[in-house]
Image (cartoon, rainbow, N blue to C red; front, top):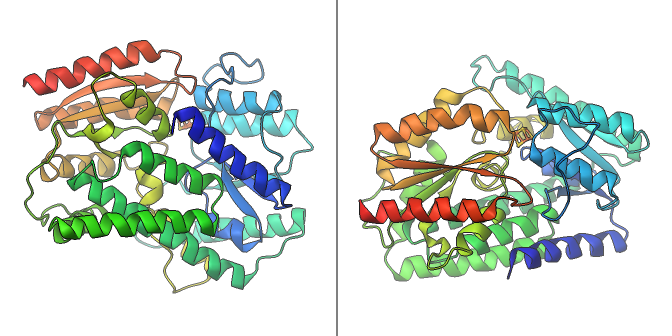
Length: 402
Ligand code: SF4
């Protein structure tokens, strides 16, 4: 299915849901707790940047605003957004999102908007970050109940835990299997499935992902790879790559894509658009709406629902918008050799300060391991697509020659 086809399919699912009378809460930041929204009997939907939406200049936004939030804001000003019961913004992330929240509140005072403020750090040992986020989640829940008259229902919460937990388990497995054999499921299909679920997290889409994961598991078993995939998954989750079973790469070169809130589907689309190249070269992404969403740990059973969600969010892979650059770079370095990575594509959302701040450290880490990198600036409209394709193609050619 083409990129446009995937977008249209996700949008059609959402339209159908709204037509059926469901109330939808939009969210922008990848770590928004979907379980909480579902527990209020509402459907969470990840709002994405859309190609074809002119987002170049918007006088209300500050000059530093990135292309991603310009695109989202333009969707709202052009009435291209779905009809939402509410919208959750993150606090304490980046200046662009802060600006978007401030301007949105002012320009669209009739919109119901909420804010979930994340702690600055995630690495405190005294548990204060968990306490802080637990309280924030509780306040968000109260605000949703008050504004939309939808109370938190424990039964809905338990159902949501199981649905979202299964999605994460399945998508984690698919990521692990692709690291061993990237042709077992194309990156494009992996992104399509994740996108469909995050746009409308319905049991029917969860079941489709579950069925595909079961068939991938069978294939891995038949090829004798089941144990190695398990060892890779363990490493990705525990961040300890010292005990991965030895494996011989099936396809080379093996590329990782790094970056923050870059659309995985757009990357897949650009790669597959280059003649003679398939997305099997991409063995892993570390993007917000890809890996970092999939590898958020499922909720545990101990503690209040808010505490469970806080712990899960705080244990998920970190974003460039958060403190912890040293931890992120260490993680990246430890997987370079263990996963036999040949090159890194550093994707930067245009005008995204966090992405641009992180890129030099990624380059330095890769170079320490003798791994080549290429920087790919990208915007939601793929306005510089031809140049991106040439850069990626030359990068891949340089890897095949070395
Ligand atoms: S993290 Fe980057 S891409 Fe995401 S909203 Fe902030 S500036 Fe934009």
